[in-house]
Image 1 (tube, rainbow, N blue to C red):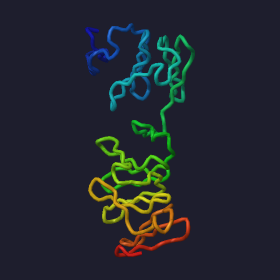
Image 2: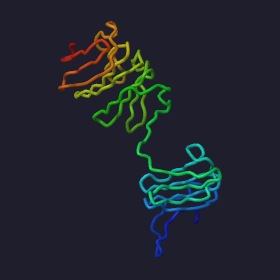
Image 3: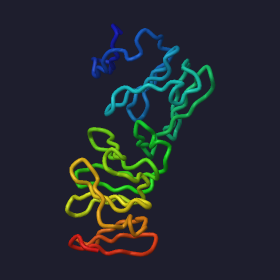
Image 4: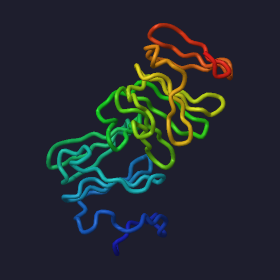
Length: 221
């Protein structure tokens, strides 16, 4: 009412969920689930979901619904949410996995290796698209412009000193210096593709290559 969504307990107003996120669209049905989420089905604007922790979300034809006219919502004994639309019946289940995809969708390349930094950032190495880093600021891409002359990165690792290493197929071994990756040693000249990286114990880097295992300590192979 009055452009806002509020909950009445029978004696007083308790929760105020803010202004209508669906604008002038007609509301066809509402349902509060056992998990505390509010589901609002609309005419031509799809399904709106309010999560106490995440706020409002909107499901439409662009992200899963067969049609944007939502006519009914119900919850079954297993806490699945059934949504009746003009285009058919949909079932919603909680996702166990959250997909993390950069804006360029990895340039269509597969992810070969991942590592997490001590500051919480996650590094992902790809076969042909260089390296990606995901942190609280979002995605950052490291390719040729960041010093990775070979973007077929098979291994990525942050060592105990906070240094990020990247092993490539045929381009050698790289290490992050500032905002750029710098090639280390002469593995590229020796034609040794780097396929795996492991630090053990602290200060000793093991480099797996297509032609054997290399031990690096005190920056010496």
